[in-house]
Length: 256
Ligand code: 1GP
Image (cartoon, rainbow, N blue to C red; front, side, top):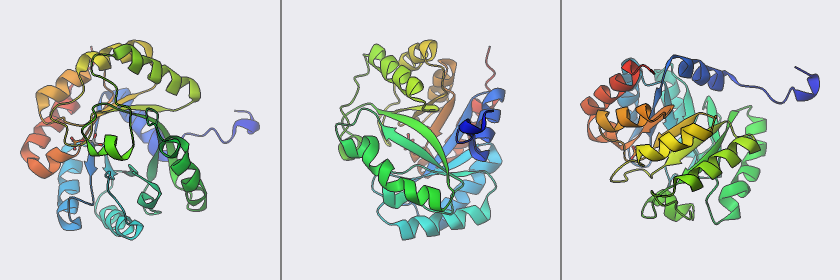
């Protein structure tokens, strides 16, 4: 590659994710330091690692203390081998102990801050601590979730796939390397699989789906529709056996 393009590098964690995606769909587990203590989080992280979840994402819409993030992530780091990726709600969610950060922009926010402001403020920290930044376009559905309220999203209706496709293509053309379709943590149901199917017909960057996924059947339907990465958060706290089955379903799924 030309030396002028040396900044365009795929880091260790992103390469690992891409390699996993060559084998099939991937599961990631989201742990929210605001809703779960570090002791329980560590136990859950060990279980999901053993079961085959490919990464731990740490974050939540109300994370407010960098000190707590440092403690949470550094403790997890000592106990598991799979990568820990920050899923930041804001600048204070950054911690130098993580392996990577989803460097994300909430594309359908009404607020400059969530599209580029927080990212601008976070950039010097990321440079200073050499955190791997993985460019991610984030799109929020539904209006009644914390992420939607805090991120001032103009939520995309479930019946407007062509708008999602347009956002997805824009994300791809702008150089984002992943597209996250978010129903919101704790949503009563995931985004419809038909949206994922249509997006996958047009958008080539890997598609992450999260929010409201509680059963193996829902996960199977989404990966059948083409979801590349399935994220579950609440389920780890609610029902670990159900989560084990869900991870197995994704692991055993073979693309036709
Ligand atoms: C939220 O997509 C994640 O950002 C996970 O949502 O907690 O509903 O699994 P759940």
